[in-house]
Image 1 (cartoon, helix red, strand yellow):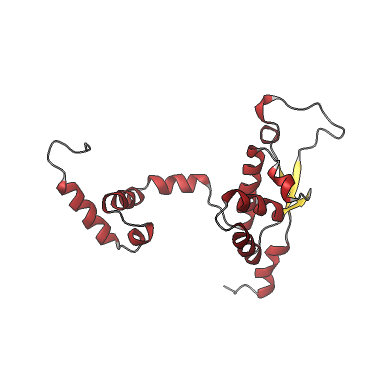
Image 2: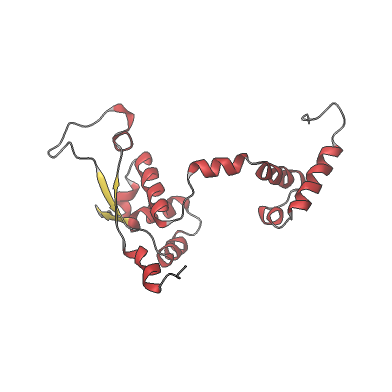
Length: 169
């Protein structure tokens, strides 16, 4: 199997994607505006994937401000129509959320919701959550545990509960 070349790896940053915006996202509340000239064609925007440098710069600029982070990610990815930061802030929340999901998808930063939900429902994820709650551990501390340690601590918690009172606190 051949290795990727540097050109192949860098090519993704120069791509642009036409993304169709569903009418239910564009026109929330059930009230669609009067048809405009050229209707019949789907509403689209053109997005470019974010590069590592762009994400680093946006993260530094936004610091701990999640709203600014989201707006900057959308602004930097949006090629057509190009919007300024204040214009991005005026987008309705549903459209902004849709655009952000698409930016994450084309930039390789997002996980499909089904995979996230499946991960959250896994026994290991639930066990790690219980351990963090019970022992006050950080996610980093729980993440550093081996599978054997997770199993041992979960068993210790289970054995600690009095008989007949399982599930009660």
